[in-house]
Amino acid sequence: MLRRHFLAASALPLLGCQMPSADTAHITGGFTDTGFARGHRLRDTPAWPVPAVTRRTRVLIAGGGVAGLAAARSLRLRGVEDFALLELEDNPGGNSRAGEVAGIACPQGAHYLPLPGDDAPEVQDLLEEFGLRQRQAGRWVYDERHLCHSPQERLFFNDAWQDGLLPMQDVDASTLTQYHRFASLVDKARHREIWTIPRQKSPWTQAKQALAAITFVAYLDANGLTDPQLRWYLDYCCKDDYGAGIATVSAWAGIHYFASRHGFHVPGSEAAEREGLLTWPEGNAWLTRRMAQPLKERLHTGQVVLRVEEVARGVVVESFNTATQQVERWQAERAVVALPIFVAARVVQKAPEFLVAAARRMVYAPWLVANIHIKAPLHDRPGPAPSWDNVLYGASGLGYVDAMHQSLRPVPGPTVLTHYRALGDMAGSRMDGRKFLLERPWAAWREEIVAELAAAHPDLPAKATHMDITRYGHAMAVPVPNSQGEIGFSPSWSGRKQLSKKKQSSLQAGRLHFAHSDWAGYSVFEEAFTLGHLAGRDAA
Image (cartoon, rainbow, N blue to C red; front, side):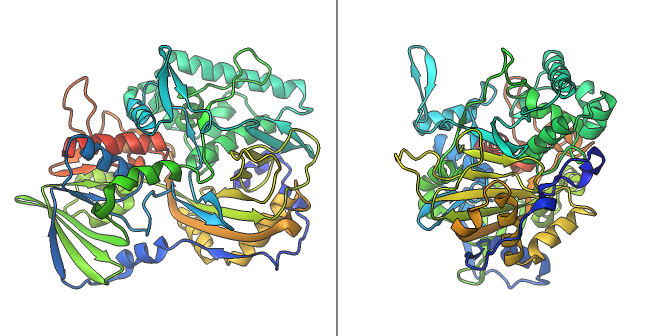
């Protein structure tokens, strides 16, 4: 995640300028992604053969990410068993898939879920269904085996590790003053407006629209918040949730990150409390695999959706089966289009204007996820012990999470470090970032990533044995200025059907129901799951 391009004016030190050279030739690996070639066939194939087979189902779900899986679950909860789900990849889950390196499970995308609040009852119900939380003595209690074990996070700053990710070690009084000033701004925003996840549970107001009209860095400038440490931290947070930093995302997104959850608290203050979260060695694939398990023969993987069209008596969906190399036609009463907006706009025939407009405005952040196997524990610099989330100040990437952090083994051993990078801030167009991601050789990524992490762990190059890299060209929607009111779940949606004032509804056009995290304007589990749940309910 090239987060430093826009912060040159802040004169932040770049670890990239101090990266030691290291011998990486012994580290094996390669790219693990397959979706690029399949997805690009949709774009590059001038004509497809006529369908070789016709199938029928009551509800057809196009897309097997979190939203599509949530729609399938919602149908089953309402007694609808006659449905089919088409998924591009060999495994469902979208950005919440996982793999293994040297027998150790590790995430290939999203790796945690914050404990959902009461604004996300659909997600809370899912966690209860999976036994992750239960009512005890009148209150909800989460299974501690799945809560992130302590220590949770640490930052490599000023050549040493510190607890937490907000830079605190040896910062001066002016930095602390700016921390408190930003905390006050977030606190005022939380009292003046309603901020929720999912975002459709809160009203879209003129104050939010004003924030959505400018970049987050412009908001910080206007409020005199120029401290490099504060800006680095806010940049990190935005990249973590949105795939792009403070010069790219809107001020609405920057405030929403804190106001919708835990606020902004300076360590040592009475209000400071670390957010609870759920995580697993395989990341959020722990959830998506359980969501997919009941589908059985209704799940069809390796399917490139080519066409979705509403007809007189239902919906027709055509897909290319990569296993049989044939085009298949599906006839259904209704369809849930759980595809990214840019794909939905390409395949939906006579696309409704709200879909066309959203696709025109949508910006995506490319991502890279590198899973690095190390054969022995790493030596540590001074400071807190190894944590689940380990971040390097000023680096190009977002650090790494430890796949074995949840293990109860008494003695540390081999593990997999999952390293994340978002390319949403690359100079030039967003296509430049995707082109760079796709065309850069695996060995070049290997050398850069190992050198970056070696700044904190000089012994990592010698202990790393294998690196699998997964690339996402359109990983997540970026909430850029002026996108939230048009793309997001707001009253301006012409396609939103209001069932009643108390009942949330899905985005619908005739017999087509749209569900994907893109429609929230940014990509997190709670948004995708809730939108999918509503679409499945309304399609039942």
